[in-house]
Image (cartoon, rainbow, N blue to C red; front, side, top):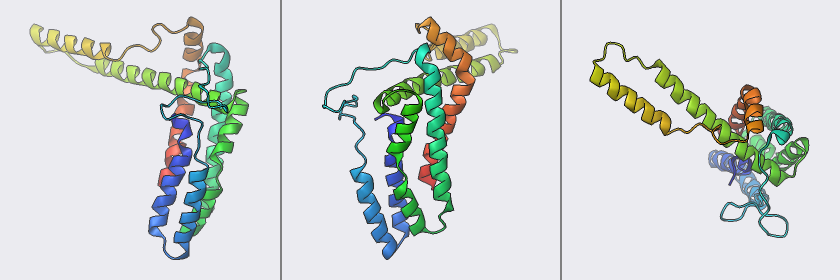
Length: 216
């Protein structure tokens, strides 16, 4: 299941956590909202993780390209705005029962749909493109972290054999984290490099907002 399809699951986890702290009528609210969350949790994904269309057939994959990157950025902005608005509404509740009710009213599918509309794609296509982008950005981030670690390594003062061993280890470490730009479509690579900072910021915001649902 793709990461951007998890908000309902996160909301359910938060509901269950809050329900465990509440008693009496609050517990009844938890049961009711749990049922709603479970009924709404269908995400169009088959058990093997493949995206399915309305007829239950595997939908053709939509690939991330330089042409749809700008629209995907707009979708991420819209999704983050929707998530933040939902969290702001949740923060206004000052009781467990109030939080349960507010959380149950949050329509994650509507947030996804608005993001997809902003990206000018279907909800499933938005999910596919977002997954691809986040995977690439994560790989870029990991590669840059490893490269910095290697660059910051100080081999001065080492004897020749120790230095050679250290350099060998660092080379093997870098080889274990392939450059995500290798083999990438040149136009997409150029577009990603131009937008890398902004897209990485949106990715970090998105992940942070989703995890805030767990913390309540």
